[in-house]
Amino acid sequence: MNLPLLERLSALSSLMMALAICSGAAQAATTLIHNVKGYTINDGKLTQFSAIQFTDDKIDHIYAVKPNSLDNSVKVIDGQGNSMLPGLIDAHGHVLNYGLSLMRVDLVNSASEQEAVSRVKAYRDNNPDQRWIQGRGWNQVQWPSDKFPTAASLDKLFPNTPVFLQRIDGHAGWANTKAMALAGITKDTKAPVGGEIIKDNQGNPTGVFIDYAMNLITDKIPPLSKAEQKRVLVKAMKALAQVGLTSVHDAGVTADHLELYQELANDKQMPIRINAMLYLPSEGWQQKLAQGQYASDDHFFQFNSVKIQSDGALGSRGAALHEDYSDQPGTKGILLHDNKDLANYINTAMAKGFQVNTHAIGDHANTLTFDHYAKLIKQSGSQAMRHRIEHAQVLRPEDIPKFAQMNVIASIQATHATSDKNMAEDRIGKERLKGAYAWRSLLNAGARIANGSDFPVEPTNPFFGLHASITRQDRNNQPLGGWISKEALTTVEALKSFTLDAAYAGHQEALLGSLTPGKQADFVLIKEDLFNQAPKSIWQNKVLETWIAGRKVYHQ
Image (cartoon, rainbow, N blue to C red; front, side, top):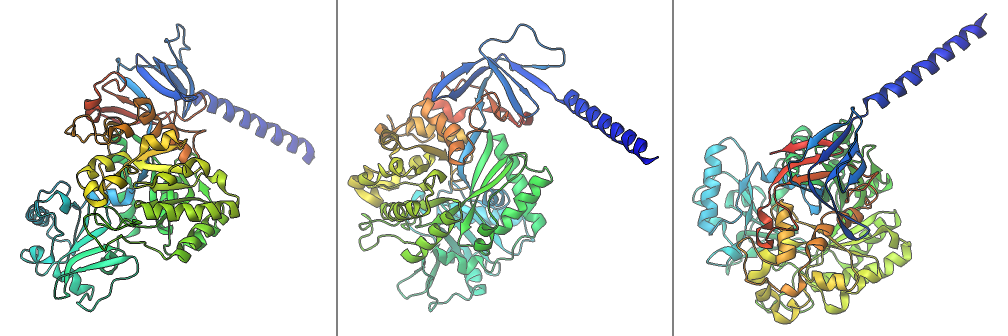
């Protein structure tokens, strides 16, 4: 009696599954965008096209000429002669910090210490209820004084409200007296290893804290709730999509932030793709590595790498140099970890199968990182993990060939060169400048370059980075002819560094980085033709539309 019933139920189940499959196939949406000036890099060569077809999130074809006949179900969109590029990838940014910068005092390009204080006051007038005032972006090198600011200038307007303002590079912070009092900072306070408290002639703290010394202040700032952090991340990602970024390598997040991303990905709330690096050391880092790598099913979130910081930044003289700073004899910068600890972090991550991305700006930090890599890559058998050096900013000539020899990626940020050009020679002198921001030398030595911005240190706009890569000029197109112009990239090389090679640096070149059948339909429509516009105007190019996984996520 039961067997026929089971057979009928089985047949009914099979029919329902078949109907579901047919229904899913019927719902697959195919789109063709034509009348575009399209560019992508395939097999190392620039390919041009006029139309692209994709179904749901995957590319079907790119066409030199629009096909004559199309199925009636295909949605056809006229690109109106605009240019199309693969989705742009920033290989080194800080998403949460960028989101926070959108909600804090913007001190970028403040012309003096007094102007910076005025901006803080204007912000406070519009946000009277905040317990702490925070901001970012000051750069004393751009001020007439060329000196670090002091708590005294903030104290005049904010005697009772704590203020903490990070330098443009995130490697120094400026606090007022109230903030220092809440943190218990006195003339007897000693800086932690990897940090420095700037003090005056009487030994009193001036209000400026370098690298790990900033933690003395930031540890006292009330943390954001989980929901608040999610809102900040989403706000940042939406803003990044508006400048044409479809993917970002988030360079140094905590285990808690990894979980926030994972929850956003599970809830389909990720506006762009994120490839996250776990910051070492941070709370729970060993347990997080033990849990292994993670990637969401829709490829919007990935975690397979770590970020380790070996030194500070050049602007604050925290970058670790072999020899003294040219403009401050007796100072060689700061190594943020002792040699044993740095080796332990690198070795632990490599042994667990993670890609290791080490921040190294000064030539000493770069040499030290290569010394560890040479031993530990071989020991762990992890050469295929494509370990990286983040910034690779000041290099000894003998270290440049090591990138290709060890299969290590140079993760650069082109706008750092055009921002640093006015102070770099002062810091390191002409001789060491020969190995600084040396992108052409890296390529000639067989290295692979992944490009980015290090936002919010620099602006998020990737066209600023393309412009700097190609012209070696700032956005005033100075200096004439470019700064150390022999190290410039071609337009094809620059685009590749923001697309295919950035994808390669994240182990995602099979999915992203070029407009190729089978890959994700990530692309941008832009106003000007990148390959036919005057190089000096590249930074002014406008993003008209950003598409990710076959969906338009931004339009002007």
